[in-house]
Length: 326
Image (cartoon, one colour):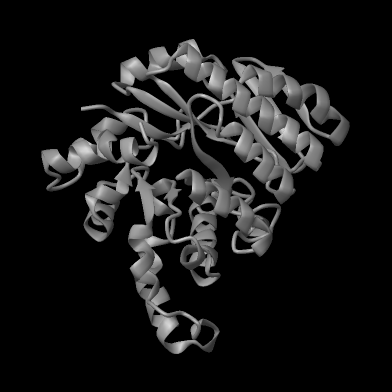
């Protein structure tokens, strides 16, 4: 059984160098602090250690966790905070570094491409370039782009290119909803991340993206955020609300158009997710290596009630093999 972690974050040194040098002209900062780094771009901040940067150390950690493959994705603050040209340069730095990491560890590391979505024409051009790089297996996309929702038709060219490539889009929150009310208690992550994912999926479904691109798939972090657990409410709303009279099928019919990772942080949630969408729609994830992630993602599978060995194999890696075309 191969174990493939589809939710594993990474800051390449090359990306950090560009962020530090060129980002400073746009107000960004990178600071070396005891044990690692601290960065800031506009109002978005993050602190992290060397495990996020050094790929050889990452592979050692993967061995300890019994993980065969990491799908590398950038994380906060992504690149949408920057001017289009800097966002393109940052995206290229990440994509080139991910391809280099794959060349160094071809059986262990693949990448999700980063593109400057705030400039859709540049995004499509970089997506097409990145698709030719070794080891690139999908697109990394925030749940909103500087407050613009994902059903905005300016983004549809990116979706068309991903569908043509057969690329799954890995969604992830970065600049989350309700920030004026989630400043305390780390609520920007505890609540903001899953809520923002749910809102993004609602726009993809109600805004027609899933209908316009029937072969396009999205992988959702954090066990799908709020999406799976609001589906009854969405179905009811589609029956009774005039704002949703354009819907030709209930929102629940789209549940299996998405895949979901296992970062539910509760065995009951993960068990309910598998029951709701099927084991063939769930993928292993860790959120490596944040404190809000899973130190032992495979152990999560051992605790899901009633999970068969076949289903365990699907979730641990077989589903990701298909999504990432490995």
